[in-house]
Length: 391
Image 1: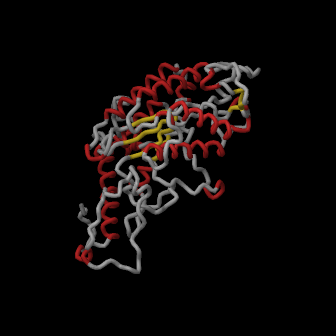
Image 2: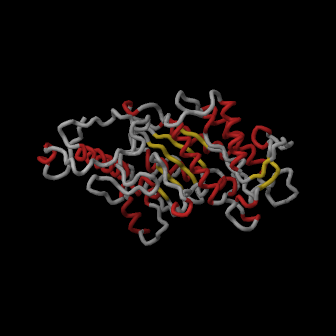
Image 3: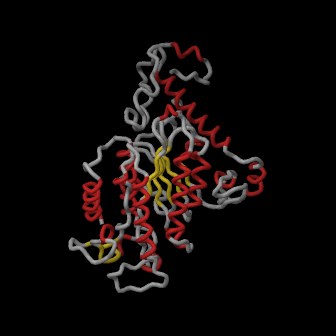
């Protein structure tokens, strides 16, 4: 159905298309399950560029209205009180949830591609300059669902400097919501602040949890927070005409040298978190298994627990064998920080690969690329071989 435009001089829409100026490019992933080709049928006698302008413009207005609708009463007063602090987060401070009830000032670096999209400048086609996609500018409407990468500093701004690493950008649009230093509860609150009022289904990939362990929370407490996030995502009401239910997958976490010592390593640190992280990763994989849906490829949720580790072809005695059977210790050059005691983040080369694997996960989810194995066990074996080659 043609969406009525708010553009002035509507009489022009019945003129013949300008054959000398092609219409704007189709949105990323158009023609896939993320954006089925019949979603926005165009009227033959109306110039395509006008209709695509209307589709993009309406999505922009809707997203802005949903964000404003989620604000708590009195949020402007709170904003005025803290507007001079550049770390004041208007998104998280001005929203109340069961995780963080009430309106209170929250200070952190909140990186959101959705917030950027709402405020970004537009061209004559109502397209905006996307900073993460290979095809840009593109429409504000990038599909009938929201693919969302939810992360802390692990994958914050993972694309890095694309002019240097030669990464062309994502070939489908993914929303990134990353907060350095965030705990699971912080990300839970931020996700609801941005997407609770949106009526389209969401597909979330969570890559976070190390900050919780660093702050003294037990693995069971972290899993409990993850389960609450899973329940919140699955319980969000969505329009029936937008596809299947919401989905969420949780990646396993690396073993940073700052926090852990591999049992075969002779190094010693105070407060070794190896056992906690190992148990947490085991519970994460079990949690993913409980989330099976017809369209949810749980076997292909990214697993990062062997990244930044040295591996060998011969199995070791490190338990559990299904996760660390070929591990001998940390690969020092795989981490960003210079001193071993400070190594918490994987280096830019590995972070780029991590980000690419997250993009591939969403492409599998939407059927853009096929699953490479007929079963979960076969998929895990392929993934183990790929991880060993990359690390």
